[in-house]
Structure formats: C-alpha cells, structure tokens
Image 1 (tube, one colour):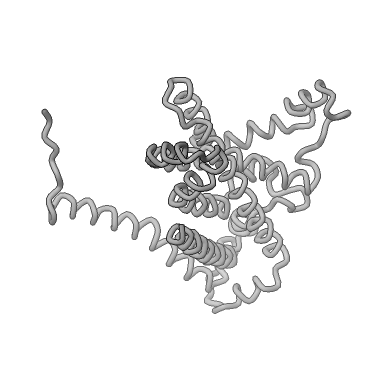
Image 2 (cartoon, rainbow, N blue to C red):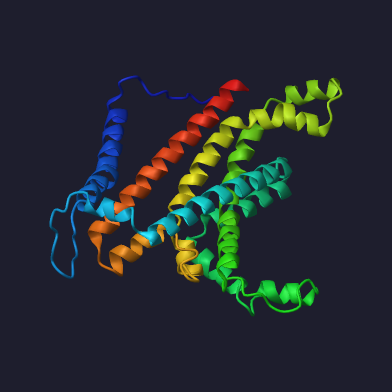
Length: 296
C-alpha cells in the first residue's frame, strides 16, 4: 500500500516554484513585450545607428500600409479556415480512435505525430510532396485523376489552399488529442441510457457527444486560433510568402521588416498590432464558447 503525499497549503517549496515560474514569465514574456512596445515608438534602424523617438508615427503608417493589410487578411483567413477544418477533422478522428485496443493506441500516436515535428521539417517534406514532379502529382496522374501535374505552390490561390492544408494537417494532431481526452471523460452511463431510450447514432452524437465536448472544444479552438495567428515557419519554408505575397502571413511580414528591411521600430509596431489582435480574438472566442458551455 502506497501513501500519497499531499502538498500542504502554504508549502514553502511550492511558493519557491511559483516565484521561479513568475520570474521566468516576467523575464521572457513581460519584459520583451514592454521593450517591443517602446521600440514601436522609435525609428530604430541598426544600419543607420538611429533610434529616435517618433511617437505614434509607426502606428499612423500602418493605416497606409497595403502589404500589412494583405498579410493581416491572409492571416485571419488562414486562422479561421484552418481552425474550423482541424477541429472538425479532429472530432472525427477522436471518435474513430476512441477505442482501448493496442492498434487504436498506436494509431493515436500516428495521428499526433505531425504535432511534434518541427515546422521547418514539415515545410520541407510538404514542399517535396507538392512539387510539380512530387509524390502527389505522380499519384494523381498515375490514377488518371488529373491529366498533367499541377503547380500547387505556383499560383496565388493554389498556394493559399496548399498552405492551409499543410497547416490543418499539422494542427489536427493536437485537436484530435484534446477531443479524445474530452470524449473519454463522458460517462458511459449516458450512452447506455440513450440506447435504452432507443436513440440512434446521430441522436447520441447530437444530444450527448457534441454537448459534452464543449470544454475540450473551447480549449482546442482557442489554442488553434492563436497558433495560426503567429504561424511563420511552415509558410517560410513552403512559399516564403509567395507567389506575389499571396501567402505572406503577418508574422512573416514582421520578420521581413526587422531583418531584411532593418526597420526595427516599424516591425515592433506591427508585432504589437498582431499581439493586440490575437488577444482580442482569443478573449472573444473563449467568452463565446464559455457561454455555450453554460447554455448546454
């Protein structure tokens, strides 16, 4: 028989851990955000060795920046579409893999595999798959589905579609795990009672499964949106923002401003804008989904 040691209220060890965590949060999150906020009020350029205070001029310039507007539009479109697709597919995979046998446990690992891969690795693998002479075109041509290879990353619309598919493929591993955990928390007695009442498969999903998934859906949707709003590595490897800047995300645009154009001040202002947009969207979506949890 083992004895579980419970932490005591006011335990000094827990207080020390909390202080260390708080210190790391301030060091790596709060201070960089404050520094970025200050830089956004300057015209810092390392090549010109200048960092003069310019007030809100960077923020004023953003209202006239068509490249920023395009990148923000693409980022919001990508975040919304990928979040919906990844969560719908994730719910489907979770229901399919909600079994206890060894084979299903192995399939869960395979489903989660894309999530643990580096975004750079994912980008290079999919760039090879989507190339004109890549695996996808060879398979489609050999099956007679298409007559000639498609340039998946060569036109703006196809490139946007391809980036979205790759991002959804990566994110589905995460959404599957979250929804699977939510599924396994649903009491079996609810399904047994529904079967006694003669409820069909669709009715059990609509009346029991979908409502009980609400807490997991809140977490999954919110984190999916935040992940997509700051997506950089996959796009940088797949398309570098092209063709014709059609797949340039806001995160990619910030990197270009800072390290290609050497406009640290303006890049910091755009980063602050992306931060505010992410916070507003995350809080709004969380509040909306929390309200749904209460109503159910």
